[in-house]
Length: 261
Image 1 (tube, rainbow, N blue to C red):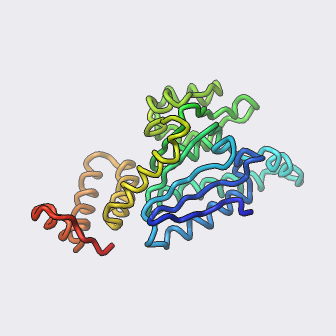
Image 2 (tube, rainbow, N blue to C red):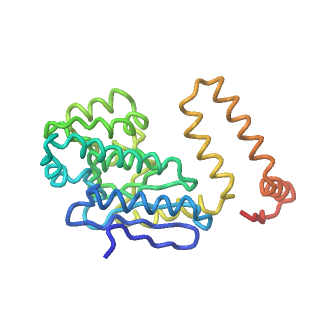
Image 3 (cartoon, rainbow, N blue to C red):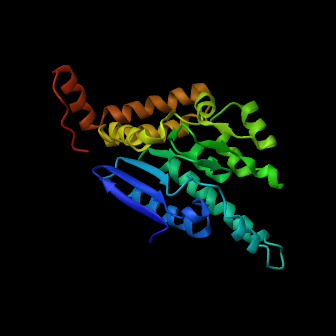
């Protein structure tokens, strides 16, 4: 059985981390599987949205601590292994945000440390109401510095630092209020609610969403004046797309669009 399962339904790719006995930890094998699959999705024009979930009782418990402990064995105490590990994990996170398709985290149980980072990294997130979120590495003496990157770009600085420095958890309602997730739903509605969101996205013009996602992450790092100049050019690119021209005509003529992409 694969450690990461992919099931495509229409234009939505469903990815399920499948290591429930380890709470879907981001082991070396899991990171490699995620990277390979994300790279495949980048080139797959038939997929317009991606859902990422976890098998078993948890979404993701972060890095595999047993593997990290084993990585200390070399003479350097694990320095080279740890450097490589965090670089590989960061690459997965950055690949998610540079993927043409929006990625939605379907979260349940717990999302801790790098698992919480994964939720914060995804473009959107829907969580079951009983989910707990934490960057709790500080409880074992490891400040969650790489998860901090994504977390601090989702929620307020003070709330992020409180979570990082105390190891306390947010429940789903607090995570929604803080902006870490889009919304929480009853456990028995989680899959349907996530799928509904993915299908709405998949129904839009794929090239427009691709352009928009790329621009979203690029402009957010810019000063306001530069961001307006940049996004103005993006709008021109989008307007010159023949499918966009056809979509506007369809709206004016009060008919459904017939897109080619």
